[in-house]
Image (cartoon, rainbow over all chains, first blue to last red; front, top):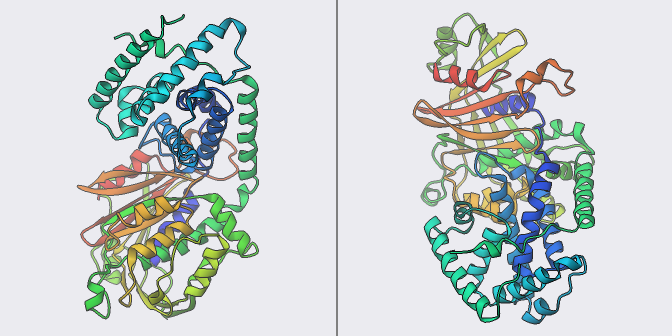
Length: 185
Length: 331
């Protein structure tokens, strides 16, 4: 069709390869967020690293679909991360058993962080008892450092609903934490 | 509520892990960048082929049951879809380096009427008369811009016969196994009436702008083809995932929407307001200030597409986006 072929001819004539996303900067900025998101979802260890790798690899492969006029990069990236997490849990049927959280060694943690590591293992145990939605929201908020608005856009919940659920969940978490002794650090 | 304790358990990933992953991503980048110069020609061919697919799916299916032929397709909306360059490379490889998607979609293409070469006209009135519709031009131009030429093309007619066996081969080669080709499509005869166009050229130094306008194209297609299904196939060929393709295929009104394939590593796109309607702006992200440098791939540019009162407009050029919008809004 003449009009379309003309349009497309111009498109290909005038269009240039885009200035790509500055991948290294985005990687540096978002790697800890994604990594911690998975740590809070599945605990410490190689699984969190594997899921982080899968997320960035998928993001790279799908980078041409990212539209900065539609969503912030972090929103887009965490959409992928959430799918990766969902795939992981689907394949494994159940989240990791509590024993894995409590016994999982983290050999990279410095000795002076041992106490905090112990607390984290305890936290992941408590997180593993939470319903899926609550654990997801906590991970997005406190591990990935996303604000409630971004979490709302990712999860389809309203912003106020996100805040309410988080508030309630944290209260429960603190209560349970208190039952197990004082918080270190 | 004290929730700070929940932040405290964050930690940085191990440096060796971070470095290894970054290296892995860089390797992916290098692999993807290994054929940069081969992109544009295939992209053009692919775009044409995908347009053909878009045309195929641009008809209502409901009324098809009651009519031998569907009524006219009218473009009211343009929707851009990003095309994965890796997919383009893949298709190219499947055809031993020579991309001819047109041949994959049809075994028989007949030009029933040649539109002929564009003719130059002295003024808009004469070009409009030749084209058979009232063409419009911007009443004001960006500073320094001048109108060079007005041309018009005649109408044409193309008929092609769809061949699903070739398309099936393509899908198989691409390992797309979860879509089914509609049996009604095989052997279907599709007529496309190419509408007359009025083409106006502008320039300012090295800047070039072209305005094309035409009545909406007319296409007839035998009944029985379920259009979202065809759309889904076209979108899968374009490289969209099954989920994305299905979502888009079943959410677009194919009766009035023209799909515009946009090479992913070439351009970005967004919707813009024009004359109270929605237009599609496709633009490169390279800054214009870089034009003076020795860029190996030429100049950046943009294409603005919109539809109004049964006509389609395409304004493209190498000027700044605000200037392009200014011209469109001055029509």
